[in-house]
Image (cartoon, rainbow, N blue to C red):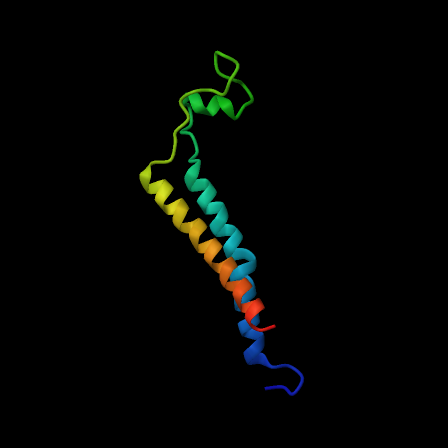
Length: 96
């Protein structure tokens, strides 16, 4: 160990920074993706991506929705993100 750099604390900071700085936004993005699955190619829902609309001027019909498993996993990922935010706030408030 160097007298200037505490390597034990440094690797802990790097790991926590990677988990919270990249992991939580990725988990949130995964939850959003689970709520809105991609349309299969060649279906009516794929025309909504190209800017065209349905026959009534609204969005194209036929877009798949998330099933019960998708909603459950999305809720779980959002709960983990919210719990980690709450934990972080409690750690900051508890140490001040």
